[in-house]
Image (cartoon, rainbow, N blue to C red; front, side):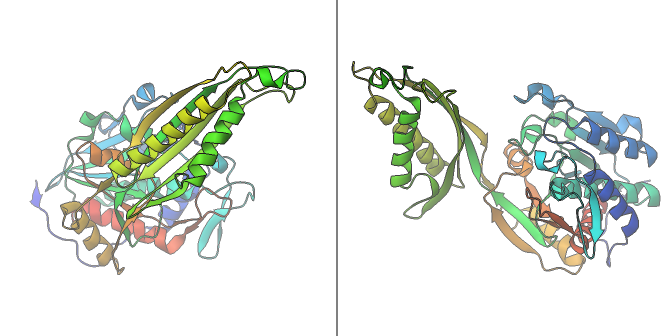
Length: 400
């Protein structure tokens, strides 16, 4: 029998011991981007243990469409509602950065940290993945009424939001209210995020003996140096501020050369450009392209020959900003307030799975679950914030 949904009253009760046990177990499982089979298997095992029917559990083939490849696709659980209401989606990615491999989660006071000092904790985003799993556990064990629900565990978030980008949208069931858990405190609701381009720059010079005849060569490193110097000098590298427009850029990877006595003939660079403003973000990309094209034409050998440059810009994710009166934003704020916290709306300069979900017609609010100092060996999980995130997750899933 289907009942009409009504707001949840009072602080939702959760089994705190179960939530902490789950998050500790999940953080200990290796699962860097592209190698998520073990963590997906562990979550599926727990789903079967709590009685989620096999027919409700699916995996898509996002990894086959991802340029990274990978072991498995996204994990999706879709449940019919026991009360009336629009379908709700709860999401949190399962992959971690490589620094988390070898993590040994241990509780120290009011935080969980890695006992292994050489690793990050992996609370980003195993804490979010646990919010979903714990919510589903509470619903199953306590037979709690709920509207139609979709639980979505994307892969490959840390390498360009690839799981969310290539998800089989039909498997999500057309949700109307969407919530994602990632970094930050439990009282934060992120309603907008920057967009980003991934830049790949390949420079072809000309090899020559660096001792006998360096003048006959064309140094790919020299070309890159000229371009980078121009970008830094003109304010297009790092924090980019032009009038009221802002963005960021970074050249993060440079590969080339294998001997000091050879003029380097090939060089590959990987860079990025970000901005909330799509037009300004394109200006940053164009500045990079122009700097490398000018550099390649200015560096010549004694014969007057120049090198070549190939410049590719791939939009990793588009920026978005939800209105403060968007239904998902208002519902998220009510849930945060219901656990005794003051809701705070914010924007982020990082990419989120919400970028692609929103771009695909599923406006998504991202909530925090207590991760601190992510992507570093100092990473920790604030236990109170994490438990509040679990309470918020249960409220959102049961129809506040």
